[in-house]
Each structure stands twice: as C-alpha cells, then as structure tokens.
Image (cartoon, rainbow, N blue to C red; front, side, top):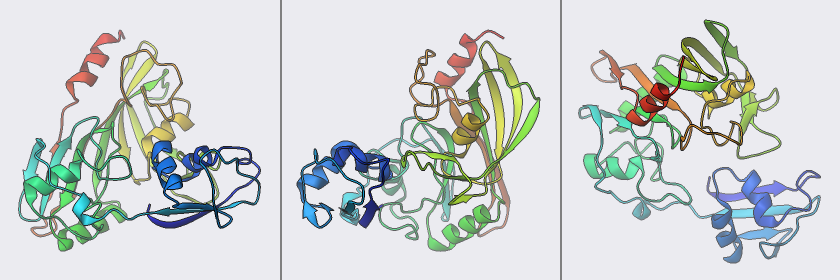
Length: 304
C-alpha cells in the first residue's frame, strides 16, 4: 500500500481520532506509523493538515500519502534459512513462526525477503522492490513452506499455477471447540471486513470466491486438530473460514477469542505441504515440513 489513498469518513467512523480512524481503514499500517505520517504532513483532511488527535467528521475526505518503499531500504541480511530445495529458478524454504515475509511499514528488516536477498543475490522483479521473488505469502505467525522465484519467467509460471489452482497447499491447524464432522468444506466468499478494514470477513459484496477443505486428525480437550486443503488463496483464508464456522484457530489474535491460555504467541497454523510443477523442467515437486517443536508441545499438553 503506497502512493496517495483517499478515505471518505462515514457515520461509523465519525468521532474517532484521525490516527485511530486511519489505523482501522488503512491496511497493514500501525497507528505509530500513521502518527508519523500525519506529523510529517503526509495526511490531509479536506485539504488541510491537522493533528493526529483531530476528531474526524462524517463527509471528511482524508488523503493519506504513503511513500513507496525504495529499493535501497530492502537490504540483504544474513539470516539463517531452512532451505528445502533450490536451483537457478526458485527456492523453497520452511519459514519460522514470527518472521514477516516481505518489508512493509514497521517491518523493513528481518524479513524473509531480506534473508533471500542475502542468500540468493537476486530475485524476480515482478512484485517490485518491496516484494522481490514473492509468489505467495504466509502470515507472520504462520510457519511452513513457501516458494520464491529467482527470475521473472519462473515467477510468472508459478503465479499462473496459483491462479489456476494447480499448486498444492496443505495446512495443519489447532482450532477451538469440537468439530463434529470427520471432514467438511467451507465455501464462503471473503472480502474486506466493512466494520474493520484491517480484517477480512465472509461477505457478499466486494468479495472473492474462497474454498477450504478440512479433515479432523484428532479431537482434544476443548480443541480439534485439523488437516486443511486450500483450493483458493485469499488473505487470512483459513483463519477467516474457521472463525466463520465457529472454530477459530487457536492463538489467533485477530479472529480468535480475546482470552487464550495455551501460551501461544500467534495462531497455531502451519503450512505443512507444498507442491507445484517446476517452471522449467515441468517435473512435479512436492515438499513436506514437520510441525514446529513449539506447536508439537502444545498438542502434547492437551489430553484427548
């Protein structure tokens, strides 16, 4: 999200501080970063510069100018990578929990892209300087397998496979409550939550088709351990769909319950399997990554 963005304040947003309002409607921006932009004159309300504490009113037109992330800001960093496969076209890594995939406001270093730039030297430029090589993404606290492209031809081929639903993606998740069915499907469109722009939701308007299949692996005290298959790849898809059917992912700070006691920092979600056709050799490649030890310990702590 960069460049000039415009937001029209409606009745629901009226009365909020400007920084609080923008934190709710501007995707992926922290309140502290928004305050910095306001004080630097990068935010105008109906053409006027105001303070972060300004209370927005219905009809206010808020112009938010976000500077584009420059190439020099994405620096290679010596960060260890758990590499599962690598050749001249692509690299498959097992991303740890807590690592952001690509630089964005508030996370300019320590990301997977910083690590890949150091290791590979060069990546596909299709997604620009901020997200070089990134074909698909995983949330910060979702661990598991992710593929990055080293050149534009490989990137385009992998992106096409994703669009045509040819990439195999399998996940492991611990969810709240007892899932009674042995297996099931959630076929519900996902779009931006009209009440909270920082969240996604199952909505009918301005949404895209989203399909998730699940199978019960184990029922535990108060939770169910699931194996999931994505047919589509919408933002936060598993997290949104599980919350939608009344079984939010354990530890999920955005879609789960406010109180949580398993000691998890972030959602219990792991991208366990990844499969695709190699863009150059056309050979089927399949990879599998075990559950991280901290998640395995959580499972072991729960009685059947």
